[in-house]
Image 1 (cartoon, rainbow, N blue to C red):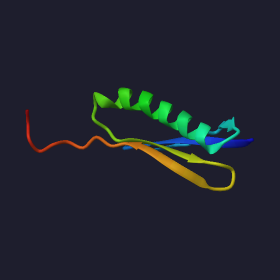
Image 2: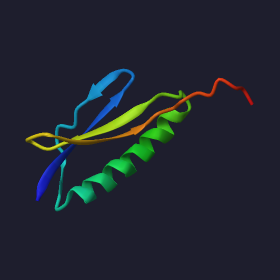
Image 3: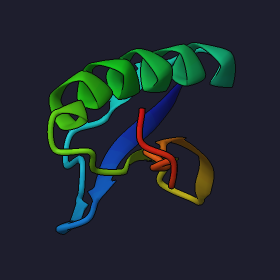
Image 4: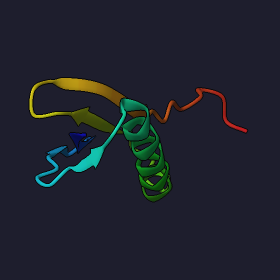
Length: 76
């Protein structure tokens, strides 16, 4: 079992996860990151701000999941 830490990065900076969660596989950590990112994207959608979940273990950075709000130059 590996402990994964889910740090949040937004336009204001990095918010480190001090506790982390234990998972048997990296795939389980990826699902957790995607679910967390979906919730964060809902919160940040009204202010149109990019947000990312940076996932690491005690040893290394493993992956990043990001929501990028890319404005179109065409108004509808």
